[in-house]
Length: 608
Ligand code: F6R
Image 1 (cartoon, rainbow, N blue to C red):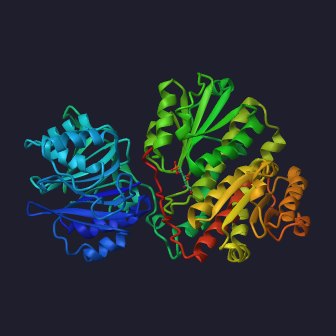
Image 2: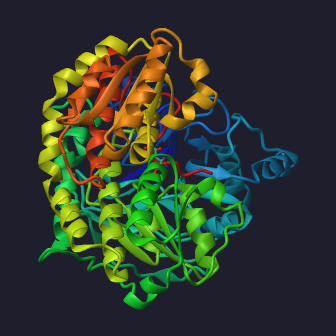
Image 3: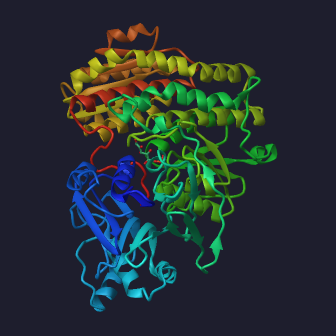
C-alpha cells in the first residue's frame, strides 16, 4: 500500500526512481511523484493516474536533473487521487520533501497546531503535516529533527525525506510500515519492497521500527532514538530477478498461476524426508504440541480463506478445535487465549497491518505466534515466534494465486505433522496425503493444460452481473476464494455460499441466467451437491460445475463441467482453486480490465 523508493549515487536519480516505482506499482497506483535535489534545490514532479503519466511528464525521468531523490506511488487514504494529494509533499519553504507510506492518526491535531503557527496546507493528506513539522523543528541538525518528529507522530509510517541542505543524502525512518535499504557500489537505495531494487543490488538492511537511516552514495548510517549508531547485518536477497518480471506473459497474474506447480514443488519437497513431514525451521517441542488445546488462525482476505480450508483439515486430523478469525476483527473480540493456545498467522506479504497488530496482541499475552509467510525479512517473519516460509517466490499481481496455493500446502503439511505427533493420523491417511502432495504439481499442470475449456466458459459468462459459488465442506471453503478472485479482478458481484444454506434466503437472488459455479469435489457430499444444483437450475440458473475426473453423472445436471484430477481429499482444494483462478483471469481479460492492478486495491495492505 503505497510504494517508496529513494536513490543516491553517481547516476541521474529520476530514471532510477521511476524504474523502482514501476516495480512497486502493485502497492498503489492512483498517482505518483518524485522529488530530486540538484545543486541544493529540490524539484518535484507529481501526476495523478498511473506511473506512465509521470513518466511521460518527465521524459522517463530524463528531464529531471540530480543524483539524489525520492519517489512514491500512491494508494489514496486521505484525500482523493489528485496531483496535489500525490507525494512527495514539500514543507512550506520547499526545504524538505517527504514521501510516506502509512497513516498519521493524529494528523488533524498536528495540522491545527501548525496552522496556528502560520503553516499553509496545500493538500488534504496526512503526510503534509510531516513535511511542515520537519521544517518547524529543524534547527540545522536533521537527525535531531527526525527524533523530535517521531515523538510527535501517532500511527504508522515509512518515510523518505530529502533536505536541500544535505544535497548528498536522504533520510529514512519506519514504524509499522515496511522499508528496506539497498546497498550498491557507489550508490544506495531505500524501497518499500525488494523488487524495486532487485535489478541493482541484492544486499539489503531490513529496518526495524524507529531506526533512522542517513543514506549517502558510499555510506549508510543507522541510528536509534538516542542518536546511537546501530550496526546491522547485511542480508542477501535470494530471489531470482526473472521471478519478479513478466517473462513473456501478458500479466503477472497468469504468470503466477502458471508458476504454481513449481511453487508447490519448492514449498512441499524440502518438507518431506524419508516419507515423513519435517519442519526443520520449527522449534516447537513435542510436549508443547501435545499440550495445545486450541488453535486460532488469523489472517486477512485470501490468507483468511486458507485458514478456513485449514480448519477443516486440522480439526479432522488433529481433533484440536480451530477457530479462524479475520485479523481486523480478532483484535477487538477479546479472544480467549492461554498457554495452551497456538495462534497461526498467515500472510503472503508479511506486512499486512491488521495481521501484524493481531500477532503482536497475542504475543503480548504470552501466546506463541506461528507465522506462515512468503516474504523473507518481512515484519511478520521477523517478529513471529515461529516461521514457516512458503517458497512461492515474488508475487506481484494484486490478486494472490501462488501464495494462496502454497499456504494451503503448508496447512496440510502442518496438520499432518501435528496429527502425527499426537498419534491421531493413521499410516494409510498419512501416506495418502503425502502422495497427494507430491503428485500435486503434475496434477496442477494437467489443470493448466485445460486452459481452452476454462477460457471458453469465461467467454460465455464474462458479462454476468452476479455470480454465486456454492459448495459443501472443503468445497465451500474454496468457494470463498473463487468468489473473491472473481469480484476483485472482474468487478462482477459474486458470493460464496454453503450449498445447503442457499435456500435459507439467498436463493431468492437466483433468476434466469444467473451463473452458479458449483464445486463438487467432496465425494461423500457429491449427491447432495447434485440436489443443490437441481434446486438452482429449477430457478433458471446456469451451472458451471467443477468435479473430479470420472464423476461424469454431473454432466446430466450442469450446463458445463470442468474436471480436476483425482487426489487425496485433503489435497483437492489445492487443485480446485486453480480453475477458479483461471476463470476469473479470463473473465477479467475478456472485459479488458487491468488484471494486475484492479481498481481500488493494492497488494500489501499496510494500513488498518
Ligand atoms: C486477494 C488478496 C488479499 C490478500 C490479503 C492479505 O487476492 O491478495 O485478500 O490475501 O490482503 O494479504 P497478505 O497475505 O499479504 O497478508
